[in-house]
Length: 72
Image: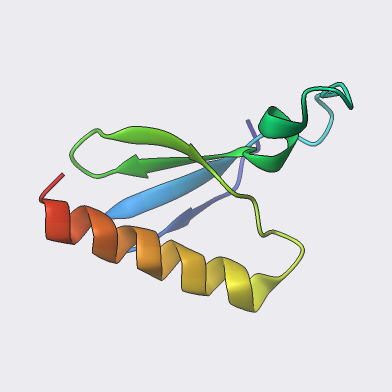
């Protein structure tokens, strides 16, 4: 994992270390190279929008709102 992470009201985003080589044929893992972790312990793989900071922040807030609505 990278040392850096993002935090919102109800979750964190943790990112795969870019030095980890993910095979081309494992496109799902390449696409879902971020962990979303709710502050109550839910964990899921999610999209990595690191190449678009605005989209990344919007997505972080959307996932946080999702966890808040679910209470997880």
